[in-house]
Image (tube, rainbow, N blue to C red; front, side):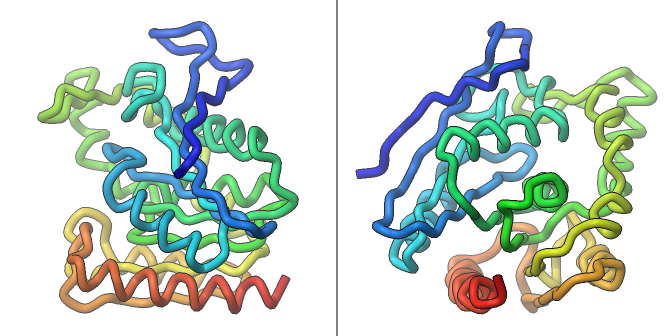
Length: 246
C-alpha cells in the first residue's frame, strides 16, 4: 500500500496555517530511482496521478505525488498557491524523501513548476512534461481579469490575484532556457485549446539541451484514456533512455 505523509514546509506561511503541511503519497519500489509528479494549476494528486504512480512502480521508480498548498488535502488557501509557493512545496517534498537523484514529471502549470525547479537542484536528472505552461502569456486572459477586478475567480470558487502574476513575472522562461542542462521531454495534445502546442515547440527551440517533443494528434489539454496509455509508454521509454545518459 502507498504510504501517506504530511510534509511541513518550513519557512512558509499561509492564510490557514503558520507552517503549511503538504499531503504527499509515496508509492514504493525496491530501487534507488525516484520520480516526483507535479499537478496542474487547478488539479491535485488524485485520479490520473495515482495511476501514473502505479505505472511508475512497475517501471522501477519510487513515485511520489502530492497536493500543492491550497489544493486537495494540503493546507493553505488556493490564492496562496503561486509559482514560488509551488516551487517551495516541491522542494520540501523532495527534501523529505531525500533521494540522491530524481526525475520530474509536470502537467500543465505543473510542467512550469518542474522546469523551473530543475534549474535549482543538481539532483534532477531529467524533466518530462505534458502540455507544459512555458511562456507566461498562457495566462493573459486571467491577467486581464485580475488587472480589471483585482482577482480571477473560477467556477469552483478558487481564485488568483496579483500575487500569482507577480511570482510568474519573476520567473520567465528565460531562466529555464539559459540554465537547464538535463534532458527534457515535452508531450502535447495537438488539439489543446488551453496551452498552445506551438508554445512547446518554441520552448524546445530555445532549450540548449537534449529535447524530445511529441505532438499527440487528436488529444486536447486532457488526454483520452488511449492518449494517456500511449503517453505513459513513451514517458517510461524516454526515462530509461535519459537515465542511461546520466
